[in-house]
Image (cartoon, rainbow, N blue to C red):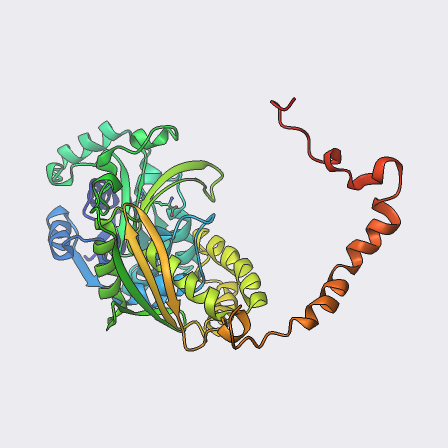
Length: 419
Ligand code: ARG
């Protein structure tokens, strides 16, 4: 008799390979392995075959890079989403998509459960579980690694006992996750936040010291906040990111070292490699500087922060996300143009920008001929602008001995070495 089925997010690594057998034994369920290509640079067909060799009754592998770029990576770029001002959220953006696709597969196969290989310490379990609970509350969630509580040695012993390929899944010294938008590297020696990441941490970026001695210029075109071209050539998002990852990585651009606040209460030291994401965020922001009104820019920073927290915290499928995205899409309607960027030994330098919707108006900014700015209006403006402060100074701050509270040293303590 056919057994009930579970859809397992399968990476081909040791944890999820062991999980296939462990779920069979512990829950009496047949495992359907699900693997998707988010641009992590793995051969998903090979992973699919490994799943079948490992005991999955069925294995599904699909390329969803375009979905990931168009609905996850680029919208997050438009939103300016950098968690705590640093992390472009590659892993956090991938999880809700994987979980959503797994729910679809679960429905197609009449599965009763879904499973993932996350530990009980990280953010990824939250992102998977919340998405499953939101989209398919009837499905049971199984998290073998969180449940079996084995040491590494016990896990390898279990694998050996059940003839699960271990060599092919040689564990890296770090815990990593990757997709088109970036690589996340953690654990091992990186757990000491004082230790400089060793060379083997990085795979997509060269050591900036070994980067070319000549800077390389790239031009990135945007339309309504989305990247549409690279060096004047129109490109689909996936190709653009893949190409830019290579170009920027060659110049050592995109390394991020972050002690971040996890949702689950701990601080953790994370290294990211996100060459394309780093360049695109810089370039995109530059077009915003040119095309967004001042108050829209100020307000957008609030939305960016709220949005990145929400994504990091696994709340992709919330109404607030849709509300914020409605703002972002509206806010980005004039964010079109081209940014000129130079890449040089780990640095991204903006050297130029242009847009048909530019709010930088030469006739207002120039000190040369053709100036249309009305300087005579400035005097009155300044009087009114400063009125609140000058009134307060006159009636409060300047009163009292020695010039009152506006004397120099009154607030700022002298530096310790000052005589
Ligand atoms: N700290 C990052 C995040 O929470 C990256 C997690 C990486 N995951 C992994 N399995 N190594 O988004």
